[in-house]
Length: 272
Image (cartoon, rainbow, N blue to C red; front, side, top):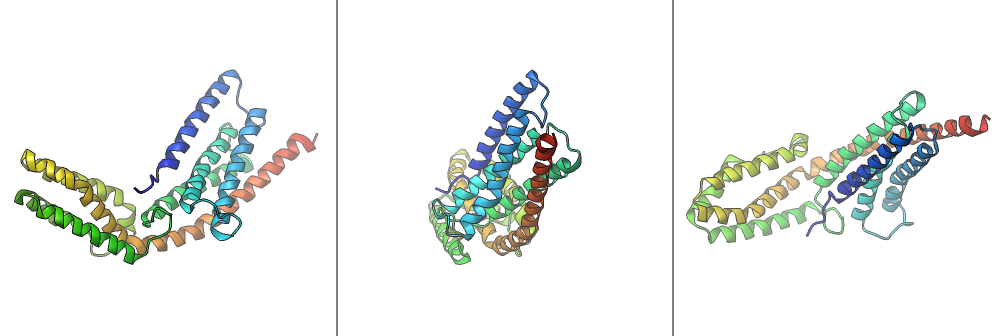
C-alpha cells in the first residue's frame, strides 16, 4: 500500500490549528507583541524549525552523517517543519511587516509557496515504498501488469460493461505528447475522468453498474500511471528548474532572518 503523501500536510494543519487557538487565547489576555516573552519564544522556535527545514533534509541527501530513516520520511518532516515554522514566525510578527522584518516575512511567504510547488512536482515523479525514484522501464512494467489484470477482469464481464469501458476510453483519450500543462492540471483531468466514469456507469443497468464500480479503482490507477509515464521527463526537468530557484530564495530568506535576529538582539539588549 503506498504511503499517504498528505499525512505531513494534515499534521501541519492540525498543529497550525492548535497554535492559532493558543494565540487567540493569549490575545484575549494581552496585546501580542513581537518583543514580548511569548513573541520571542514563538519566533525562536519557528526560526529553529525553518533552519532545520533548510539544513537537515539536505544533509540527509548529500552527506553520510545521517543515514537512518527513509528519504520519504525525511521529506515528510521537511514539509511539516517548512509549514509550521513559517506560521510560528508569522505569529511572532504580530501582523506587523515593516522594515527588515517585513522583507523577511515576504521572503518566507515566497519560499513556502515555492515549497508547495516543489512538493507538487515531486509527487508527480512515481516513487516506490522506499522512496526511491522508479525508472521509466519499471513504470512500464507496472502498467503492463495492470493492463493485463484489467483485460482479464473485462473478459469476465457482460458485453454492456465492456462497451462502457470502450466508450470511456474513446471519450477521454490522453494527449499524445506530455507538457507542463498536463503535469500541473492532472487533478482536473482526474476529476473529469471520474465524472465521465460516473456518467457512463449511471447509464448501465443496476447489475452492470455495480460491476463497473468494482473496476473503477483499477481504471483510475491505470490512467494515473499512464500520465506519470508520459510526464516523467517533464517533471524531472521542472524539478531541476525549481531547485535552481528555490535554493537561492532560501539563502536570501535566512540571510534576512539572521540580520533581523541580530538587529533585534542589539536593540533589545546590547543597546541598553
